[in-house]
Every structure is written in structure tokens, then in C-alpha cells.
Length: 282
Image 1 (cartoon, one colour):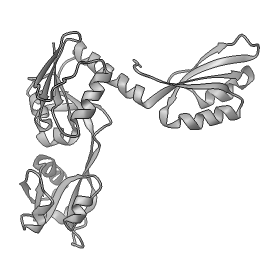
Image 2 (cartoon, one colour):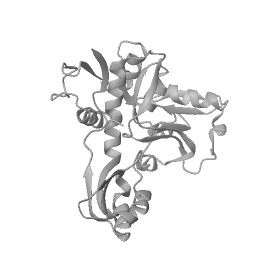
Image 3 (cartoon, helix red, strand yellow):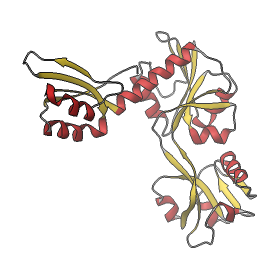
Image 4 (spheres, rainbow, N blue to C red):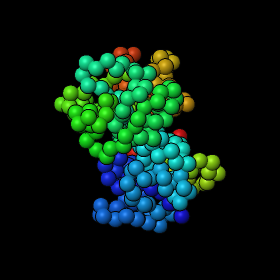
């Protein structure tokens, strides 16, 4: 039975559960459940703190897990990313007091930095040859400068409102752009159950990104139409009962569907239909 770690709370939890449900897996109905067995799919889910998931997976106790890229790298565990899931996006950055003469990572040499992600920050500093004192704080990192604990902080930045309220501003390049990822132990061999799990999630990602487009068009315009809707491999073209007309079916990017319909209409396509894809294997 495949053993999978799932975030039990936070910004990762809800989207992860939704994606797993779309992929055909049972999900817990009670937030207090710590373990859920899905016998139909031969899977056992373990609901853990997102920060701990990389440690459990890296130890080999669990086969696979869903966590944040930032948490994976911060843990320094023996786990690796195998699939990006496209939700819970965040940017990890340094912030300084407004107007301070600290403009890049090289200016951090000898300074004190407060963060909840000491592993991630220390790794970033080492990559740039910078030596600084990194202090770990759990939450409310923005107050560290005001209270004299540090000259600079490193934290997840979304809108920047909390930083501005604390008299801080970001500087330099992002330390990391993170989102939710699937991880597994480093060096793990091929496992058909893991590969099946990944295919299911990849199918969800494709279904969210693409829609199925059907339309009718005169045969002499097929070339122009197909150039607008090339599909992933090639569109399906079928003759219609009415002579000189064909039906075309193709997958197109969801975000471009409206523009493509306008372009198809302009070259004579009619009966243009767009259908959601609920599941797929590509």
C-alpha cells in the first residue's frame, strides 16, 4: 500500500485535498483524522504538519508527500521534488528597514538575519559566500528589526502589507519562488504505484489547464483552423454529412479559449463548443 504524506493545515492543505479528490482518491471528512486508508486505490494518507513532511519522506518512512518547495529545501532532508503542482505560490525574500543602505545579498555580510527558514537562508548565503548570523524565529518575523533582534529579515512575501506596516521593504533578488510540490526519497527506485499516483496528478494539472474545443469548418479552411488549434499532438478531423464541411476536435489552453473562438469564427468556423476536461492521461 502506497504511503502518502498530506498537509494537515495551512495554505497547502485545502488545495492538496481538492487535487487528490479530483485525482480519484478518498479524502478525510474530519480535520482531526490523522490517517486515512483508501482501500480502493491501495493508498494510505498521513496528515502531517507541512514543515515535517519532507523529514518523514526523506527518512523513507513514507513513499511520497505533498509540501512546499521552500519547506523541502529548508529541511535539508533526503527528499527530492518530482512534480510541481501549481498552487500555494509564494516568494521568499529579504527585507530591510525603509531607507537602509542594504541593497543586495553581499551587503548582508556580518549582519544579523531573522527568519523562520534558517536552513534555506543559510544555504542561500553560503552560495554567495556571505557570512551572517541567522536567528530562527517562529512567526512574527517582521518585529525582529524593531525589537533589535536583527538588522534584516527573510520571509515569505505576498502583498508586502505586513512588511510596510512594520517599516520594512524588500530588496535584492528573490531567495526562492516556491509552490506546492510532490516529493519522494532521494534515490528511490522505480515504483509502479508511485508512477500511477504521479500520472493521476499530472492528469489533473492538464485537465485544469486545457479545455476541449469542437467546431465545424469548410474543408478548404482546415489548414488555417488547425494552425489555430494544433492540439497536443494533432487535432481530430472528421467529415460531416454536409459535403465540403468537416468537424474538428482539439485541446486548447483554457486561458486562450475565448481568443481562439474569435479567430475561428473570423475564418468561417461555426458550432464552436468548449468542454471542460474532468480527467485525462496524456
